[in-house]
Length: 168
Image 1 (cartoon, rainbow, N blue to C red):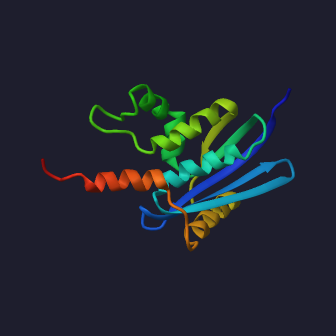
Image 2 (cartoon, rainbow, N blue to C red):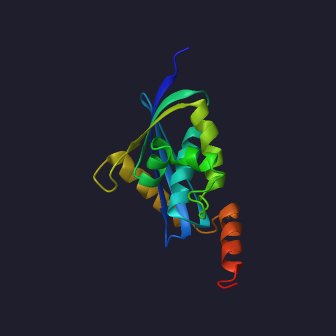
């Protein structure tokens, strides 16, 4: 069976970074177009960039061939340069002493990349690409919403980091 060809644009935003954050997604299939967005009260830009890709791929009802455009070099490089797989193979460590960030999100994204045939493409932000600009607007609008839900894992991990003493 031939897979459907899907074009996706994604973007993430955080006001204050960390701070209130949001993501925006545009999915295109032929003449069909769908927008998605959402946000959290306390998160980071990088988390929203990854979450945008997750939510976009989750929205697909069957395995597809996807070209995913993102202005996040962190997201695109982590996948295309193999950083995520390397971190995973090292027990989610970036270096001997430094833990990889956003592990909870990478663990959600990796199975989606197994399900779909995804090509990541980096696009320059704020360079006049209408779909990238629209995703940016969706992400910022989502981040500005009142009564955003908790990004529970981020908030819990951040609270644990803040609670650690500076000196031993």
